[in-house]
Image 1 (spheres, helix red, strand yellow):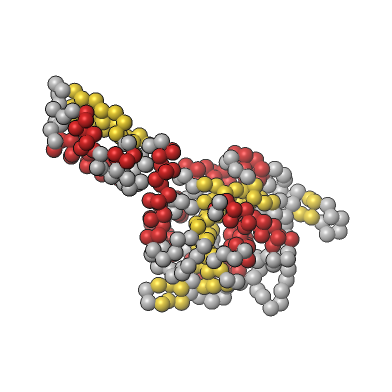
Image 2 (cartoon, rainbow, N blue to C red):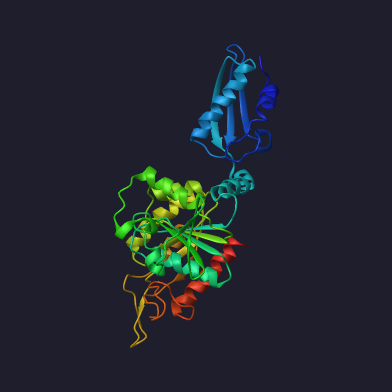
Length: 352
């Protein structure tokens, strides 16, 4: 009959499929019970992520090892390792995954821009945050992951299409920011009628088949809500940080909380909340009119245990005859200055 010490020695070399460390390094074997009369072994094991396909494979591996070495029957229980252990080993493992995702060339900071519902200005925040990061000296790319409601090319005034070099797609560059979007691959603004798995493959292609070059930041404009694409992105980018966009309206903030909770459950750090359409300031009187109510951004930040990165009023960019970019705020525009502050806060949080 196997002893407890022998069982520990047999399981020590087993590799955690998520943290890529041995059970010995993780102190993963939590308890062992032996019933000698039945030659039965029960083991409780801590791993990086439970209730997954990888856990099932790990279970078969452990049972096989113990039965091969004398146990007649094996009982297994899994629990998640303590947060401090996961934090210690997770970054290196996840960065390796993300390097592979981009073909091993660039290893940028990933920032996803999310909202609970549509129409709150999420894409506007994405493109202006990207431009502001570029103005602060960063090399920036955008993936327009809002497959059904792509709008980034139109917002930035992009008129070109991506080129192809060998087996790689070359993203379009506008204002020094590299852009890839489903909008580049759809004729005449046709509706997208693909199903989830096909869309997931397209998102993968935006990472692996695009020649991004050397980037400091890659921003992803997610679809509103918590559907298939958002879930795929959360799985693909374990170390991504998230910005949640809302309006001051209580309903928008309430729904945005779902997107925030999804980020928390998938261990994505929330950088903060951007409250868009916070108020309208009258040019005639200078008074602020709170068209969509007040307080939604702050309440959402409190629920998600984060901070408001900025509150943006209702304003249009300056009109420029020689530059068509209907949603890009100029550097000297009041909102351009606000986005500059938000970008500086993002850099401080990402690079601290």
